[in-house]
Image (cartoon, rainbow, N blue to C red; front, side, top):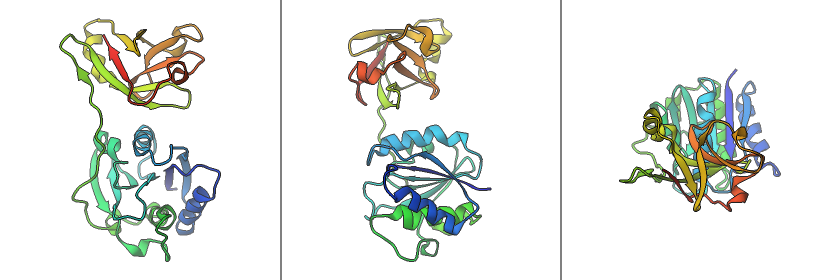
Length: 261
């Protein structure tokens, strides 16, 4: 049974998500629909790209992902259908594929142009219902990817901030994502710190002029209410507060600098 995984900024208070699901099921009544989240901050393409990357590798092969966070819906921006690691992602060509494109094995990316796969009537403001959903229905029912349109000659990617390694050995990164618990996930991966760990060096994390401390294993390695740095499930360094919210404790925002020494 084909899996269709949905990721949007539509929220769950309105009819939008249900309408998309209905449009998918009209084409493929046997599809299994899975909600990744519909609470991406409105128009936040970076956040959507990050969440998509985290969920992507844990779904079975042949899953069809439908990622609709689309500030420029109805314009000349393209819709892409990319196959990575034997999974298909439908997304607007606005950078939403950035992390999957960077980290997964690319097999092909096509531009969605075949109107025979679309709804019979198209709205300029709800292409999630009229294009993304029916195309996902067809793909999940077995339509080959080449039927959606021609090979893409380019793909838009977001400009991601780089981790800086200073001459004194300090590693400088920043907060990339703040999760539901208020944990501050950085752009510093476990790979960035592996050399120091191999040499037995202790890295101390500093944030907003405060010493968070060395990188520990679990949130419970410090008393409740205390900040802690760990390598989280994303394999990125993160700052948390045991039984609390680091985002609230530090009035943190995405883009704030983080230093490891």
